[in-house]
Structure formats: C-alpha cells, structure tokens
Image (cartoon, rainbow, N blue to C red; front, side, top):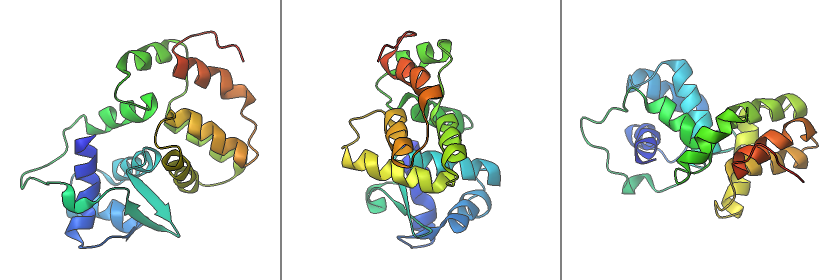
Length: 181
C-alpha cells in the first residue's frame, strides 16, 4: 500500500498540484516519470480510485491522503510486479486477508475490476464515475466494508441488477463457496 501511495503522490508532487486531470495524472506516470506504459498508468489510476487512494470529482483527481506526508526516495521506482500486487490488494479488499483471496479465486469469484466492468455495463456509467462513487461510499463507511460489497451497494444505487454476480461476490468476501442469503 505504501508503494501505491508513493506512486500516486509522485504526479502531484512533480506538478506541485493538489488536483490533476485524469490525462495529466496518467501522462505523468507514463511519460514524465517513465514508470508505466500508458495502459498500466490507466489501470493504476482506476485501482487507486477503487481503493480510495484517489478520488475523482468534476473531472479532477485528488489524492485521498496528504501527499506531503509521503516520503518519495530520490531513486524510487515501483517494482516490476507493482500492478499485480496492486490488483491483489484491490480484489481482496484488504491486505489483512491474503488467504481469502486465494480461496476466492477457487470459487470463481470476481475481482474488483471485473465487478466494476459489470456495473459499468449494467448502468451505462463510465468506470471512473463508478469508482468515484464507490470511493465516496467506502469513505462514508470508514473503510470497514470490503470494496466488492461497496461496489454492489453502489450498483444497486444506480439500478443495476446484481443478481447474477451476488453469490460469487458474497462467496469470495465470506471465503465460502456456498453463500445463502
């Protein structure tokens, strides 16, 4: 999580800004810092939004933390497996439950990105808007609810039928293959 905060804080520090457009943020990660490909920079942004590290309001990204408190070593560069570890954190909803992530994959569960895609298709809202809503609700819930559950709550808020994914998400969150409502 610390590497994610460092990576997210870097574009804001480099540009001496508290807000950045999505394009400027991705451009900074991909071309200014040369840390990621443009596609990977976009994935980092989406996952950071989903994890509450970034928030999106009126087309502007802002960090969900004080960037001045993040120490960015001079030679810092995210590890090569940065995105895989980041996706693992997002799909597990918490770094405290690594064993449930492994078992959730065995149950054919959906990771956060897949849930976001499903909701986007069902509501015709873009993923950034949904991630911002999820981030906002997760903040209201003091980050005490798994991000996948918060995503389902937001989906229902926008009238998305979640019946087809509910069991998979519930099984993954609870760590059981059979979820009874």
